[in-house]
Image (cartoon, rainbow, N blue to C red; front, side, top):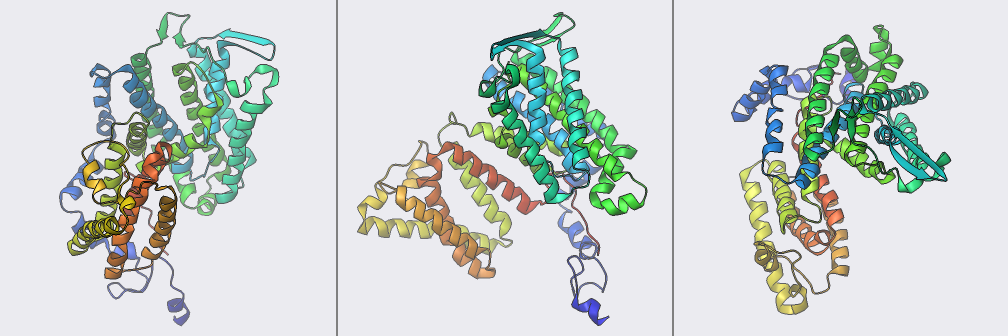
Amino acid sequence: MTERSDHTSEGVEPDENRGIGVDKWVAESDDRRERHSGFRGRIEHLWEILPPAGKLALLTPAIVVPFLPISNGNLYNYGIFILIYALLALGLNVVVGWAGLLDLGYVAFFGFGAYIYAFLSGTHSAAGHTYTHHWGAERTIPIAVLVCALLGVFLGSSSRRLLGDYLAIVTLFFGQAFVVFTNAANPAGITNGSNGLANVDPLTFFGGRIVIDTTRGYYWFLLGTVGLLLVVLYALSESRTGRAWKASREDPLSAELMGMPVNRLKIMAFSFGAGIAGLAGSIFAAVQTGAFPQNFGTTVLIIIYAVVILGGSGSLTGMIVGAVVIVASNQALDSTSPPNLPRILFYAAVIAAVYFTLKSWPQRLAAFGGTALFGLLVHAIVGSVWSDGTAGEVTSGGFLDGAIKNWVLIPTDPSRLAVYGYLMLIVSVTVLVQLKGWWRIGVLVPTLYLTAFVWENLMIQQPSVTRQVLLGLLLIGVMTIRPQGLFGQAKVEVV
């Protein structure tokens, strides 16, 4: 008994509110029930009792999107890309969410699907060779899906005994091999190197009797594909195979001892996920009338994983919602964003993070009020002793410019100071996470002001970096509130 009490593990820590050997998650069930008994609790309860058909019906508002007064450009940037990433996330969810396998080469299957479609349904010349194939989509898409599924079998078979970091390394190598193949290897002009394959045919069915070559047409086709795939994946999730995937994800050894073919299940998961990625890649090649290596890089893989993490690994609904949130926010922060939109989203994310991190209103008011007073004081002191420290111009234009200029230090030449401020911010955050109580509030106030200073003098001037920072803040905020994602199920470990 003494040895047991000295070696407690996570999930069964000593607690005066529960008995020995009682799991902490179970002991706190009454507190959670009381905490979620309000509006949020009712919403979660309604969602849980909603049948699968009702959840699928939530996609119906997407049907009216093409009839709204939006331009083809916005429909392409938002509608098309949201559905493409939804397809990719649904495929990755099979591998990561259901089977529990870390696949870092997933984007390669997306690229293989696009190149297969581009090669079989288009015309291109490279390396002294001219290739002309105009196969219909009813032939090309199934071939792309089948080839990618077979590649998934190959990857799964070669790494069937690997788990965790080792599996991630092997799959990452597979993804990088695809990058080398499309950029450098180029046998007989098949991939056309870094120039990619252009002049790709639109989606053509049954000898040209049905042609999809408009943005709205592609949107309808993708929406129908996503809806059909959701039905198929739900049926698969509720089947014996789906339950076996989830069992092997939780404990491969126990699943194997119960007679489940864990290695075969792993290969099947790779194959299903790769096939869905190939489907998304073939449609993507038709949409942009080409397949180019830069469309299948690490950035795309990060966005796909962000969708899965945000939506909740293992949840079909989460993949759709995650795609909407990630892609819409990413597109909204491009170079054509309205003035102050990145700034508004940034400060909103910071305020939300502080609000949900601090549990009491006195602490929240102290943090926000202290930061506001601290900024005004610093601005007044620096302005009186160093006029150039507040004489800079605020980046972008909008209704917040006046408030920012009178609160945040904007030097005339902020380049070096911004870098120093960035380093100080890292140190400040490192110290902050080690503190508790009112000591944390005391350090949080200058940390928040440093965050605003670095944002206004460094980050906002680099749009590409800004998008990545806001995406990271979004994920950090969601993971702080719901570590399992928006629609994921919290894992319970009983030791």
